[in-house]
Length: 83
Image (tube, rainbow, N blue to C red; front, side, top):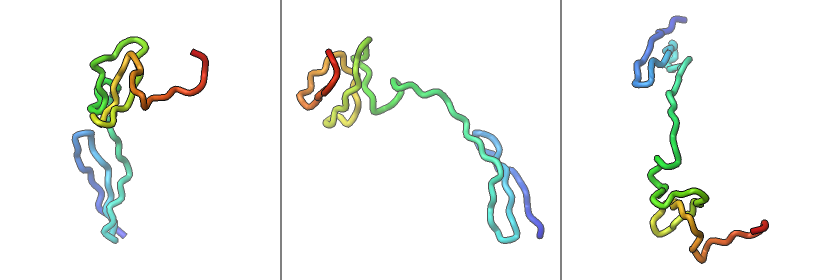
């Protein structure tokens, strides 16, 4: 049984492949380049009020998380612990 081997080039590097007689493509090596992502870079996080001690609170009407220095939402409840 013969097979065809090759490489497919992508922006993250080559993918090693083998095409068997049954026409099945078998990937033998695949790598994905990763990078550091910061919370402040996410599109659904508003960090305009980010400061030391701020909390992330979800705002349903804006459909995103907001960094808030004060908890002023009546729907937010912190139960337990000593304050």
